[in-house]
Length: 393
Image (spheres, rainbow, N blue to C red):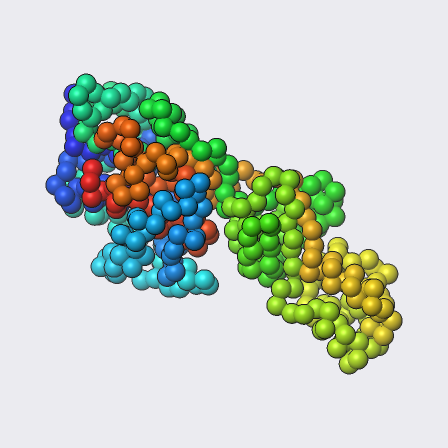
């Protein structure tokens, strides 16, 4: 029986952050992961550049059945704290839209930062190390079976992530472990995910694949304005990923393809200045030709601006600025960036991340019922939750 002070299951962002913090406190730490290399989702993040945090982070950027749960961790280990770590390691970074921060070079730099910190703190890392059994030990702690190893630990940290991107090693292990110890799990679904067409919409709009357009998209609870991308299967792009965190199956979305102008006033003005031009010629100043042909009837597009009646102006405005769409569904966990739902935060301490009714058991990162917006928020949650647990395990 090999004994450790802390065993962490999951060598992702939150698990490695927790490990390095616990190791720096002099704890004997082992990280187990069933994959063949650590930090696969870190390497994939931000298109290989790792959107590692955001200049603007608050609890408003997160979704949970317990909306106050994330506040403590985000205030105790902030984006500025992680930025200090990035700068100490000499990693060059840049800001993109909405305060998003990316590595100038590669996501590998963030993973190397975490692994180097773990190495310096004496953390032991075991890959291809699936956990087949977890049991509470008599008195205190836990015993684990991993491959041919019998392990004992005082503190067990579950940092196994959610169900998103199975190709990166996602699994339901953390949820099953929570349920083993009678800890409630909120229903899970794909988040930050492209949405798919209904069959009639696919027939009408799939030819628009590849077109990107700044749009505002809203449902009954939220609204976002960012780029939308038409695909063969549906809609993607940042604005769709953002709204997907709030969208419920069967719910309509309202999409404004021209959110930055008063289209009605613009058309009225152009009726005066370009009365002999065709409607499609004028509208092509705002939107691609293919998109206009998919949304508006040819009989309307070939009219001159002089021929437009008020009802036709209204038709154009309603079609382009109040497009009602009911998605068929989402692309699911295969392409989802996060998992909605997870281990119920009501049963976890927001300060220590310990299970309230199971001494020595901790849950951090995406396995919890906390998920953030697109823009570095989910990695910041990993850093914050991992840091907090690392102070006490």
